[in-house]
Length: 546
Image (tube, rainbow, N blue to C red; front, side):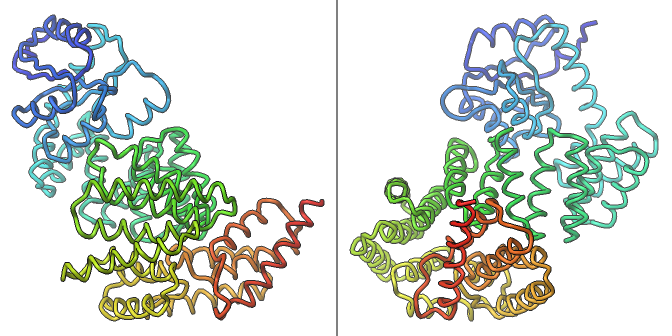
């Protein structure tokens, strides 16, 4: 039966085909809807949402040029133009797995495939509007950031055994997480799981364990979550993050690559894949993931010059660590092209400085040392002329460029200055330690001593794989530390002596060795580096011969 309630509802249809707009308008008119606006693209839809509050938005996934439907929904949320009382429905003719799962990741209120029938439309509207209406008090409290009130209202509905009890429990759990009330959140999720193994409770429980640094337990919880729901990329991503923390970045990378094949629409996931690939010495994959970040961020709230600079930096790292001369040139060419465009399109001084500094390293990768020095000098001159202090990111890029272009004294001087300036800031101290082959912060130095002591004890006891895990955990904070990388390779070599050669482990050894490739002859680890390199060459030949 058609309800008259739609007379008071305001609808927005966003679709680049006017023919579909007309079809959907007719269907809505048949349900007595009166207030219906239309938009052919995201720009017009955004303008309409700035002027009006809609009860229901129907949005096509593919809107032609510019933003797609998911990016529009994300921007509306970001600008607080999509209240919790609004129903946002993705409508698409694309039923591919990537489109479906990618859309559901953005959590629209509903997802409908074209063509839409009148009966299907009415059923979906009745269900969605009824739920929105019955939960409106909670939604309004959340919109107003009155979270304690929202939790109290959830508790009332839970106590009354409302048919929305599950929704209220889930919402309360998320609010407790947002408020960092970990004990209360954990208790809620455990109580739900004791009664019934609901996926959302398992995922929430895993998130609490992860947030409270119980990484092993969190990993198990995330694994249980994706076993319960194999389409939940959040659970797989959570497991990958825990694997990184537990010293297994290789397995983390495998998971992230696998789920990227299922849905490649997440900017944050591609950034994580790039980061973990660098930890593993897989600079090719890091560059590939960064390309996706730039492409996915285009037209979205995630678009930024920082994405392009990160891409150029990862391309430069790939060039510096590649043994394929043709590939080195290709990476460097792409990096330089990206930097030229970024420099041209941005007026911000720090962005321009960073682009020049990364440019100097890109030229170094193809042995154009004069151009590398010139780019570095241009950056130094601009910084001096500006009379301002560069931001931290620019100073870190300056350190990296000093190191890459042979100005070790300048690099060490700036590092010492930054280490002293930020000695009471653990987060920034960690950033300093990540760009050097030896930690410069007192916290980092103590951590490396501790890791080496633990790892060496495991190694001497013959527990080589445990030693590898210990050292790998340290690569998250010290990705360029030469001693730790050589320790990993040495432990892997001894493991192969114990259990036999495998191509997979030999490949891992080469990836770690590639990260420390080209260390100077005056480095304290140089003799060890040469010795381990020779051993690795011998094992590689033996493996190929076998």
